[in-house]
Length: 52
Image (cartoon, rainbow, N blue to C red; front, side, top):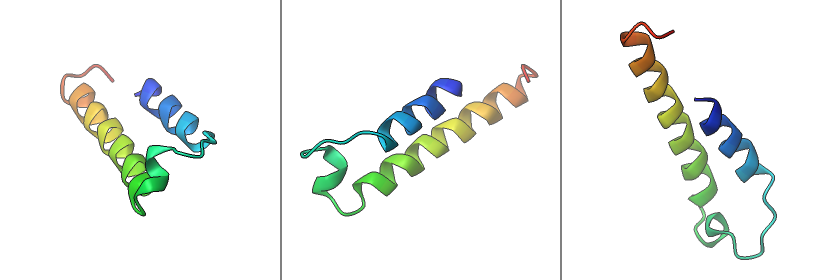
């Protein structure tokens, strides 16, 4: 879960002229939402297995 959050912060700080998120209007919000869903899924799996 920590790695997903680091990638999200890294994507926010990226400055590229041809970044994949700039070619599609919803590219960046979709990527951030996807990282949030992955983080939530990992949290639920870990919580269910009593690892948290």
